[in-house]
Length: 321
Image (cartoon, rainbow, N blue to C red; front, side, top):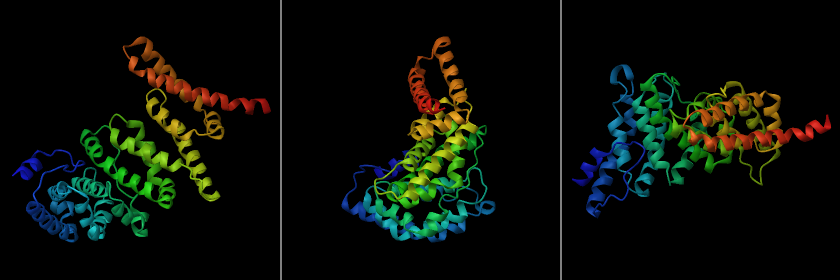
């Protein structure tokens, strides 16, 4: 009864049950039911045709399986069904241009939860070349004015980008591959400037960015060049697309990660980045003095710190001139 009652009261797709007191007999029954549900993954693709079945047919199915993840044991039970899940996600759920596909959201939530604290399931992703080639292709509509779409993305995207982040944490090769993917650059450009609407997704995207710029002692020259190119591409993208008057939090978060050396900072200078930072500073300065917005003090200090580091980087260049 407690299992059923707690399932009914669960509201988040992203937080599986923890510390649920189950007797050994109850656990056996749970595993029998869970195994039966896992065995149906291969047939689930029969119910993703939106004109026939809509976009919610599989929500309770994946929600219940997520609820069954009370320990690592259940996560490892999923491993042998991994390809059934993948063949359901791609291309049946990932490719169609459907703004709010709740089946996809529920699948990604389950997939995320079976990967958390289970490197074996993450390894299934990064060691499969078909999966690594296609996992970054996932239709996302970035309509920031449609509240239904915003709420859907707020629920779906954190799980999706967290899966990609866990893969990067385990595989340097996948990290390099993902860093150059067009859809990641799209996400940096179209999602990170809207942190207030997608806080979880933006946090995961900046986590990914940190992994993309991280350098290991054993990196080859080619890999170091890839990191350099990623920073150059991403800095240039932000300098083109950000509005300094409203996107200072994005600018601060991105530059804190991307501006690691004087070469990075000079790229900002040569691409009119000082104007962008000045616009952000003027907005924050006005908010600080003309409104009850003392909460921007931290942002103001961080922006000035970045500004100072960029200006200092110009000193050797000006001396050579």
